[in-house]
Image (cartoon, rainbow, N blue to C red; front, side, top):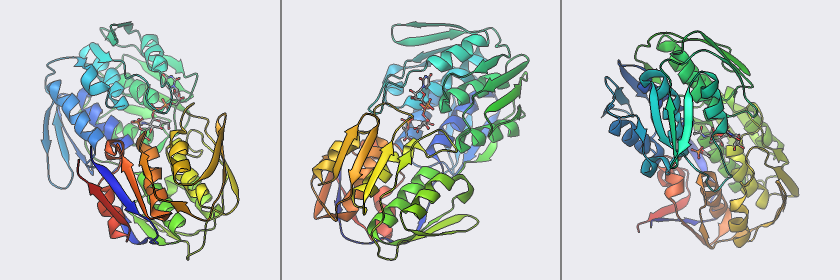
Length: 419
Ligand SMILES: CC(=O)N[C@H]1[C@@H](OP(=O)(O)OP(=O)(O)OC[C@H]2O[C@@H](n3ccc(=O)[nH]c3=O)[C@H](O)[C@@H]2O)O[C@H](CO)[C@@H](O)[C@@H]1O
Ligand SMILES: C=C(OP(=O)(O)O)C(=O)O
């Protein structure tokens, strides 16, 4: 299994170009299932999850071409199967996003249960309840969700909990349903908004996206799309935290600063100087050690859970004590044990991790347990004395494009060791 080796001690300097957002690209790729017309998505990041999505859509009969400059062309003229098999679904939770579009366009779907992963149980009950309210007949047998509906009917769905992919599944399903759907307690994440904008470009009638109440007037068909995906605010945040931890100065280019408020605010609180441009965020730490910050994760516009591990790593080397509360997932502290192996002074207490910053970490072999946990280990490795060897880096390849090259260009000593 490939590993990543990071040798700590070099402040990061320079500009990093941010890729398209994984969590926007995946639902938009799945939205190609809604139309028999050709679609094109630009700015798609080269990631394992994108490859898995292409494989999943391909085996359903979607014609897929990879164009120049990170374009993906998709054509779901006719679908060969409504099956999303276990082998693909188990490697990527976002596979559940085929459910809404398949049901809406095809009238049936068989999707393997995505199951839990290292950050919590992650059930899909709210997706199923919502689709059932729209008239779908749903059962779960042999580990597969079996769903049928001659034509979905518009419905009012109030989510018990804010769910990002749940909102996206219902949003896509509602675009082809008969009548009006109202999704309440909807997720307001920028990636949901990006999907909605793409659906609107296909002819969908949607309003209220970006608020907690989305209204969709169903149509009998949708056209194809030609769309450019949103930049990845989590990738950008990860590089900015790395700059803050190493005392460096980094510009994250090709971003939308307006959707990064919660993260930027915490970076300022830790002592960084931040300059916001139209499409960049620049962080200057001026060689200083960051101050510890308190964080509580929450749905957008709150602090993103997908940045929690990175800030936990920052607190490990910051001045003072920081408390991080995780309220979105019940088990998203697997990285704490690995950070402790590098010398971090932190304890998990229920849904909190309390960290007393130490002046230095020491490199050690560590294991990546999930996507953002692996990113946080790279960040810790950048400031640890000596070598940090990160195992199971397939997690990082799910969500970070060319991570070694990008950190390398900023001056980090980082390399991938082949299996
Ligand atoms: C591909 C994608 O976009 N992934 C993101 C998405 O995941 P995902 O959409 O899976 O996360 P959700 O927003 O659904 O999860 C939020 C909470 O709701 C719970 N829940 C969710 C659905 C359900 O049917 N029942 C239920 O109880 C979950 O267990 C969790 O505790 O949003 C998360 C929260 O911002 C991010 O960390 C992930 O990066
Ligand atoms: C948890 C994440 O992704 P997923 O929902 O695909 O597991 C993430 O992007 O941090």
